[in-house]
Length: 573
Image 1 (tube, rainbow, N blue to C red):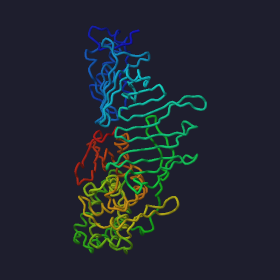
Image 2 (cartoon, rainbow, N blue to C red):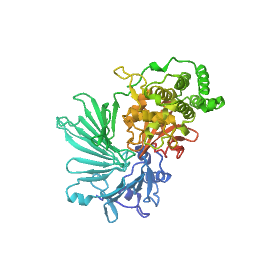
Image 3 (cartoon, rainbow, N blue to C red):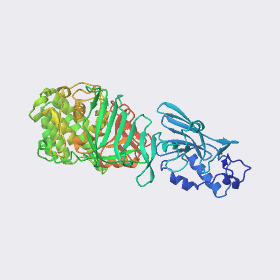
Image 4 (cartoon, one colour):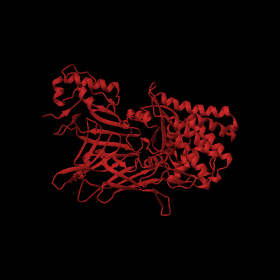
């Protein structure tokens, strides 16, 4: 039987063409692809193949190159129905197939035989030569997935039962065959390597081949620090403890951060790690004792206006103070009118009460370094940030971009928590958790005098500084942040839970696989800002406009690169 296929020519019959390769109906092929939009040319090409299947005249240009776009952002180039090239961001690969007489050769299973794969991943070039690797005994099979969700994946199998799959998002997943006690042979994931150099290694129990014992995660922060997280099973339980080490800090050349706890660890066939944090609701709780009695919004507004003008906020100009207060409340009303999560009147009253108490509470401890002028500056910058967080939240010269996303979420949707931290830091010298932990204790984070002293910095206000320094203090730093090595996703959520009792939604386009547009819109409506992570930086998605179908991104650099972006521009599926 002839197992080759070549470019159709006008003098070949449809029956001859179908003898070489039976084609699926276009609707069936489309159904197996992701739901992301594809180029019109690709859709037309698939319909032409459908026409051939149904014995209608075949177009002359069936062999022309076709581009398809997948949900992970990859653009695939197909020729004669076979994937021959993939590009995803700066990563790319090309595929050469074995040919005889100009025709692609297929094996007994109908798989096109791959001759060579050339790849550029993370700036490194490599080539897989199937014939050479087979001659050296290092390869048993090299195939390319030509249909389904895995379309474009390059699968390399060795004679030792190991498989390495390079997906179209250029993550490489390693599997191996193991034998269970009942004699069955199954496949398990052993590693995931991402194109940015990060990796996840899975280690299993020697006597129970599918029981995870340890997960090792390594990645590099935006400042070049290498972070390693070791997640180990605790005895025979389903609980895991995670220890984080940061390269190049501490007396022994590395810094050991506070351990965290996980449960329900599992990995997908794609190698991605999923788990629950045991302290997901660790800091949920009632109003703190120091929050004071709740009061109505009008009374709180009047009290704040009186206190602020008496303490020369904006030089005591009540019209200016009212202007920023009204801007704050108009922004909140904008969320309420759309039915999105927004601060209640009680939350707004608490916010004004916290700002008033920055002046009226007795001062103790290290907070004595915060003078009257600094308190006035703190309240002025806090009002600006509450009225217009897109403009007045900036990171300055240190690597707190991930923590800025928490600050933006609090200013936008939970202002009572942001102002509570500003009040506590400036009057007590420490900040406290929202609610209590599982031992019934309220977590207290002490700031150093250096962190409390106002330090002018490029585009960063005093309220920005106090929140950001309180956040890094919660992660063990007592400095002004110049030795701060960046924030892990776990640390970002730790600070968020500490401040308001809830995790943030994270869109990770650096280490993760992105997210669906619908999920990000839902998070903006019901949870607040979304931390948006790209290689070397973290921003916040703060808003969505359904009329233009665009998302607002805050970049923290004094307005540079802030603005409205499309779902495609953010890598959303």
